[in-house]
Image 1: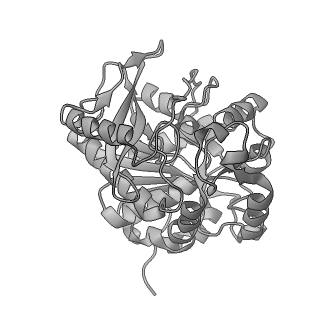
Image 2: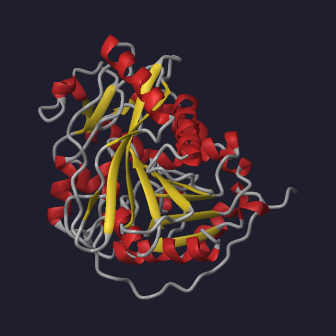
Length: 376
């Protein structure tokens, strides 16, 4: 029997308070093959040699500086595309490492910087000395919105690989980051796993809101009752995307993504910033990024975190015990090689979107502790 990873332990310090977040950009990308987008991507390729197309950095009162950058990447059909992201760093400091943050399905980068006080992973990290770059995945936020069918896991992993190259080359914020830790949530974790296992270009991996045993009956019912085509959704129909781009129905995010341990204001902000997901893409991520042992190809340290009340990936129907870090490790360790040095974490009382619950500060702190212990 092949060797498998074990799980380490860490002592988590007391959590700190969190600052008000800034909303993500509202503007959306244009179709991948349009003349405007192709011209824009060409110009961005030139700008990238000088550090990327960067909006003026803004500093907040707590010593965090954030800036928005557009990066040229390859679209799912091989054409030019753009990924937009927000870099947040400690004001006046240039960390040598950066976290590349990858949101889940029907989210955009607002997941990492929600416009509600106390719910910004990015600003929490910056105030504690860490740099983060949160991207809108292709098809979300202000990045290019391609057709849904070719938006498969391989295309998404390739675009992230290219973003990592930009981060190392100094095209984001003018810093050539020596170390890159890639961080995913939910569907984003499946894509992150595929990227890390395929390209071996990162120094660490954080997977959140994911186990290798999703609760299939819950997912089937959730998809049937909780999702709807974007073109019939009053909030997102203006995007004009094709019929296989889906989003959550109004009011569906609470039962899908949250436990009772969530602030109604946070759930409302989540609803207000929701986005779309490619149905074909989500299917390939579910199979090749989550269910199959893709993570066994990861050869760098891994931190895996879930909420104890995640109805999509934990519990009896998922055959996964998320009551503690030890029980989570017992179910997940076989999917990792020893080089992953797997460490697990469970946020008590949190649902699927663990970074948006009342005790999210504990999850932020656990992530920081792991990052520091691994030299990031």
